[in-house]
Structure formats: C-alpha cells, structure tokens
Length: 204
Image (cartoon, rainbow, N blue to C red; front, side):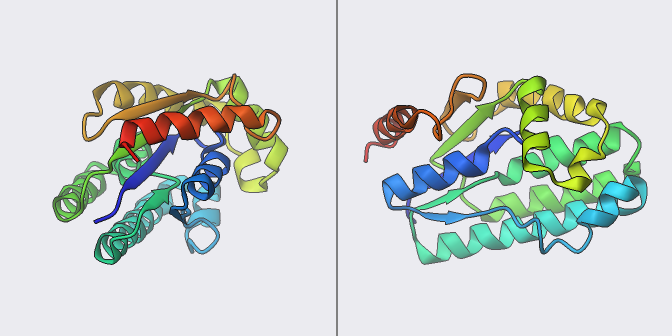
C-alpha cells in the first residue's frame, strides 16, 4: 500500500486546487470527488428531503470503491475529499436538519461503519479551514447555479459540523491550512511550504 493523503473541508474551501497542486508536486496520483456524474445532485439541490439519502449513498459507494481500488493498486494517492465527511458532515447535517429520516440515517451509518472496516486509514488528512465569508466568496466565484441557490444557513451548519468533527478526528495526523490566508494561485511560495511540511510529516 502506498501513501494516502486525503483532503477535508467545506464546499468552496479550495480543496481541489490545493489537492491537485500537492499531488503534482509529490508525483502522487489524484482522485477527485465525483460530482458531475452523480445522478442525484441537481435533484437534491431542488428537493433535499426527497433525494438526500440517494445522494449520500451514491457518494459513499463511489468513495469506498475508489479507496478499495487505490489500496489494491498500491499507488501513492491524494483524495480531494475524505470518506469520513460523508457520514460525519453531510449525512449528519441532513439528518439534523430534517432532510433525512432517522431510519435512513441509521441505515446509512450501518453501511458506513461496515465499509470503513475494509479500507485503510489515510497517512495524512489535510484540513482546509475556511470561514463562512471565504466559502461564500469562492462559491460565488465559481458560479455553480445549484450551489448559489442554497441558503447561507446550510453552509454555516456544515462549517459548525466541520469544527466539531475535526476536533474529534484521530484516524491520522492532521495538517491544517487556513484558507483565509493561503492562496497558492496568487502566492506560489504558499504551495512550497505545504509541500515541504507534508514531506516532513510523511517522511518522504
């Protein structure tokens, strides 16, 4: 099994940009979250109650399959989102806000905890810590209509869940990046520091 780095952070925090750059710098493969091919995503943004369970189940199965394939290949790999967020952030948020029924959430958690018994924990989790103003600015900049229609309260609730979850996370070392002050596109030396720090943590 090669080295595995996973990214975590709220929607719009900049995970994909930094994950891609870090993977390129380290010579790692990269796996991006499946968004465009999720058949439930657009329906979910228009009717969250109806499609929440379907959406989350698709993401969970897709992420589990990708992790299993990476484990079998033995490659060094970067994932731009962790499987833990599926359960601890997105599914939990949907349940707590009444978009997912208790029986759906409990069934989902049964699947999640069964799956993670069969996949390795990452060697490093990179957490992109982004305040709500930064998140909203980046969502507006990339202009996805389905995201622009979501109430601000939804993103704030996710941010609160991230704060709670990351304080309890203990599956691997955590490397925290403050999105408010780190911009690798404008300041390339920011990436140099990230790469140097990650190499030191992973001893590579």
